[in-house]
Image (cartoon, rainbow, N blue to C red; front, side, top):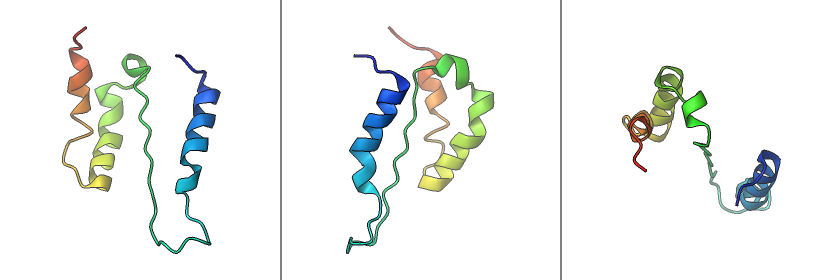
Length: 79
């Protein structure tokens, strides 16, 4: 099933809105949701364009080169 972008965004919002911090919540935590859309990888996600942000993602989450290595998964795809 293929969804339009607005439908997908609405569905993601409906499914994740409960993760936001509530003033009535007794738990003191924050959930972070990162959505990486690989739909148009070949058009927009070139190594030269993504190395900076992917390195920052790695530093943010404490992983060394996890996100930058995703380029290799799509460089030589197997059908």
